[in-house]
Image 1 (tube, rainbow, N blue to C red):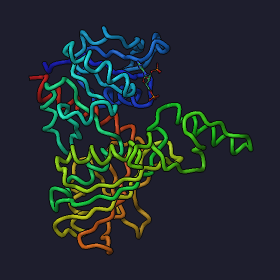
Image 2: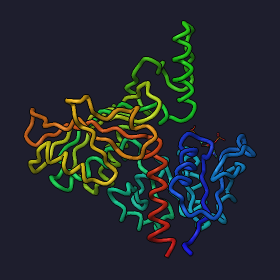
Image 3: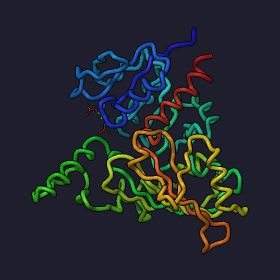
Amino acid sequence: MNKLFNVAVAGATGAVGNQMIACLQERDFPIKNLKLLATARSAGRKLRFKGKEIPVEELTEESFSEVDIGIFSAGGATSQKYAPVAARDGCVVIDNSAAWRMDPDVPLVVPEVNPHAVGQYPNKGIIANPNCSTIQMVVALAPIHRMAGIKRIVVSTYQAVSGTGKKAIDELYDQTKAMLNFLEPEKKVYPHRIAFNCLPHIDVFLENGYTKEEMKMVNETRKILEDDSIGITATTIRVPVFFSHSESINVETRDPITADEVRTLLEDAPGVTVVDDPSKNLYPMPIDAAGRDDTFVGRIRADESVPNGINLWVVSDNIRKGAATNAVQIAEILANDYLGK
Ligand code: A2P
């Protein structure tokens, strides 16, 4: 019989945590016991998994003694504090926060791109799940990088509110409803109204004028593609969309590659679906990507302003491939290739 694992989801009541539970169920992850963890406020609430009601427990230092794999999405501070506690107790942590991503001892993994990096998990007992915007970008760009060597990336994002969590989903809904009823919309999560607006501001501003989200895309992409020589500049924008991030990506390659070659390459790439037939108005859109696991790529065309330039439009569900699905795929590699042996 194949080995079964004791699994914990930390942040189980959140937008990503909920999807993690759904992904574990959909993908039939080999689970012996599933533990659901959140704050004391949520303790006792019941969540469904495979037809059973599982009570949420408060996350404490004692939560991980019997757990093989802990999937965390409860914010950076929680991961900073509890991931080492879990690892000390022999639980391998797959962490969705930014807390450990750039630690040189912690692998940062996108299974379609660098699955081999999972093998570094014994360093700290922690594997980091990248930022949602980074994941979909590297899924689309890794095949191009392997074929033609990417020299420079210019990316602008159009990011859904679900990336900020449940409260932000409610905020977009409530503000939209208020405005359509000629009422004053309330601001609680974002510094400005998000309904019928765009905010060029995701995460905090840094001294170099970029936001932390923008610098995550720069640094994480280099780490995952294992190439610090790639020039990357990002502008990240929050838009009034509930699910799925979109990205306008411009790349310059070292070797020549045509738009048709990129299209063929991406049609065969793992985790990618090419939707690119402008004559029929076919291109990726958040409403089509939501609820699915692939990264959708379209508008593939030469950038005629530079030699070896390509433009792409890349869309993916930020809660699924951008967070929960990617984390569960990492857990699958861990279970099949390392812990299950
Ligand atoms: P809770 O629902 O009890 O507050 P989201 O990103 O959608 O806002 O969800 C965040 C998730 O992280 C929730 O499940 C939340 O639990 C959980 N969480 C936040 N802070 C902590 C903490 N200090 N300890 C445990 N879980 C936490």
